Length: 81
Image 1 (spheres, helix red, strand yellow):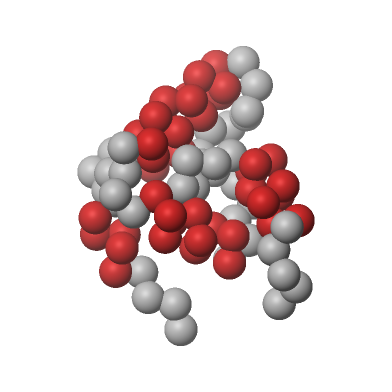
Image 2 (cartoon, helix red, strand yellow):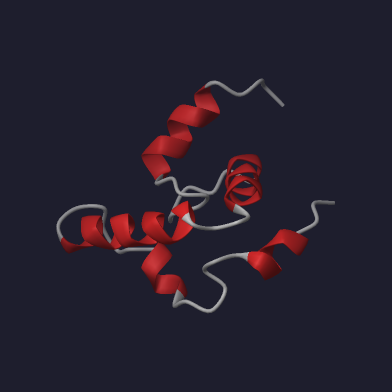
């Protein structure tokens, strides 16, 4: 079982979750993604967040400072489970 203790230290903890899950990655959604990534950039648990997203194959949202396309690219380089 995966522990999620790191979530209590996340920079996004008290922010609106919708910031990290834009409706679209184009137009206004693109600036929303960039704002979310900026929050992640300063986050002390960025790596555990990204690891969680890769392990659980999160297809949507900004996790660990990455968007879905970036995570798909990273996942291509992970060893098969």
